[in-house]
Amino acid sequence: MILRILAIATCVLACRALAQALGMPAAIGTWSASIAVICVIVGLLLARTRVGEVGMVNRIAGPVLFPGFPFAQGKLPRMVVFAWLGWTAIGALAVFAAGTPRSLPPAAPSPDGPPGPITWSLLVLSWLLLGFALLRTAMTLRWRPPPPKSARMVLLFAVLLFGTIALAVTGRHRLALTIAGLPPAIVLGGYGLILLVTILGGKKMRWN
Image (cartoon, rainbow, N blue to C red; front, top):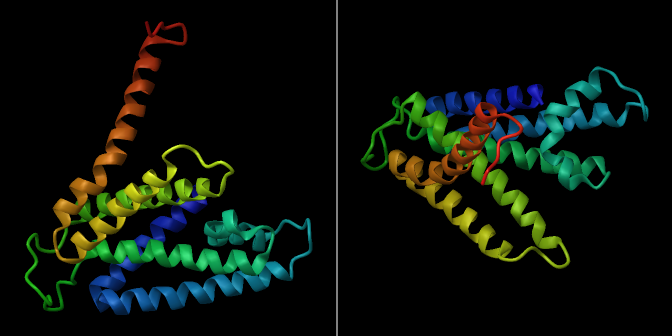
C-alpha cells in the first residue's frame, strides 16, 4: 500500500512539472507515452517470471500495474492496458489541476490565476477520491440485481468529476475545489468524528 501511494504521489508531481513546462496537451501526451512504455516493460518482465516466483519484478509490478488489477480477470495483457489507462487518467487529473503554466501566455483570462500548491494538491486529492468512488460505483452496475440508486450515484459522481475538471480547465480552480472537495470532506469528516468519539468514549460507549 505504501509503495502504491508513493507511486501515485510521484505520478501527480511529475505531471504537474510537465504541465508547467509544456502545457496541458503536451504534458498529457508525454506522460501517456512514458507510462505506456513503463507498463509494457514491466508486463514483459512479469510474463518471463515463473509462476509462484516472488522477486524484484513482482515487487515492481505491484505498484506499477495495480490500477489494472480489478479489470485483469487473470490476463496479463488486459492488466497492462488498464494500468496504462489508469495512470494516464491520474496524470491527466494532475495536469488539469495545475492550470496554465506561468511561462506560457493563457489562451483566455483565468478568473483565479494559476493555482497554488495547496489548492492544486487538494484538488488532485478530491478528484482521485471522486474517481475512485465513480469507478467502484460503476462496477456495482454489473451486479444482478444492481444496488438501488446505483445508476444515480454513478451519474452524480461523473457530473461532479468532469464538471469540476471543466471548471479547472477554464481557470476556476477555487470553485472547482469547493464543489469537488465537498463530498470527500463530508464523508471523511463524518468518519473522523465517529473515530474521535469512539476513541474518547471507549469500546463500551453507548450511542443511545
